[in-house]
Length: 394
Image (tube, rainbow, N blue to C red; front, side, top):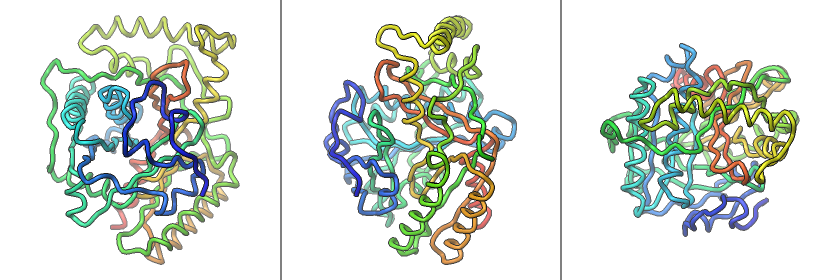
């Protein structure tokens, strides 16, 4: 198994140790994560937070996909800032997010989630629901919650979840259980570092393919793992495994398309216009650095964009396989045939959705360190629309 010991080299500058999560081995081979042996059970006294956007499909159809992704990523950004440097597992789902944490963080995690729910309603007229579910309740319902760590680059690692527990927790949230209500008016989340500056990523090889492969509850684990490995192996023939972000990084234009979104995330109760003006000046200076290649204050623009590409989470395991890949038509057809075969064997359900572009939403604690994270989704529906295909076969 391709793994290395965990440590400060892939978890972020200044991070505070978390006994359970930090002790997990960090896997450098994505295919390792298809095997259940790579995962460790989350402690019984932990909790899972989950959130999603009500009516996200309609919002995407109305062209608000960038807003949907930003609000989903804000859940994680607020938790990172509330954690005060402590590491914890999280996963981005396009129109929402999930995360795990110990009992000592319960009040802070609940408060941060409540603030994001209120902020989404005030800033964007978006209804977000959230819940915090005890891991003990997940196991009492007959599901498992296990986590692994995957490092796409030396600078960052992402959590991968298995066992069906995260999906069960999301279902409980949608049924109104374990609900977290919006924070009072005036309680803003700390979204420092949340960024939406990159231009959309056009497919270079055909289409951006959003792919979901979700194991069936009664399917043999070994057979499911083998099917997942075959799917991943088929993408190896694509350029960089289908990575939608070029090695040289995404594009940057001025003013950035996500300028207002970032201003709404950062302003708290302050003036939106003032924050937009500040960001215009900040991003104009960034454009100058990217165009000239000049560094300043420890910031190397060439290194930064290359690290951005390397750190992007274009594939993950979140109670199933999720990928956003730049894919040619032939490989797409072969993938669908392989998925259909696995579904016919009652191993998994799947969903596919094609679009011309991918988008990235980012959390950048510091431009001078390599621990910035970048969430990738399809630009015209992505994981949310691919999930509708799965629901359609139920």
